[in-house]
Length: 179
Image 1 (cartoon, rainbow, N blue to C red):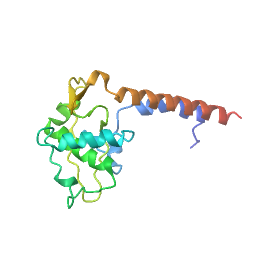
Image 2: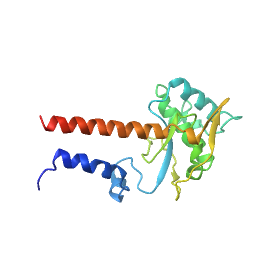
Image 3: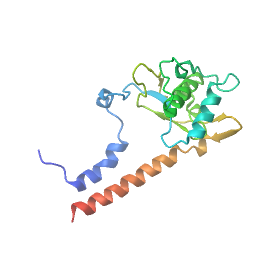
């Protein structure tokens, strides 16, 4: 079989990125094949925003998430990893707020996002939510004294950056292969 040319790969990449995931994708470690969703902290979220969101999500007068697993002695207790703690708290709150039926509950002022990649690790198991059948989401998620409307959710920004990165890398690849 002939190796695909860089130009062919360049042209096929957007199709591969936009195509529905086949069931084979579910066979990969950590990837949900059954339409499962988890609410996790974004990698680029600032520590202060994550800590404020954790404090709100785990408080009795706030989100009322069950954060026992991220307390000392809990299965998900990992003190130096604020991302993991935030992800666990965000996911628990998201599930209690209705899960996939309430995707706006996974925002935390732009510090969280939905994923189909299972964030569980070691003995720390993240329960999941089944993804909704339609893609129409409305609503807001608030914590503390601020709120973020879903219509101004930062997830569209990350998609734009991902496409910009893809196009930039494709152009670089095209020039490198023609040198």
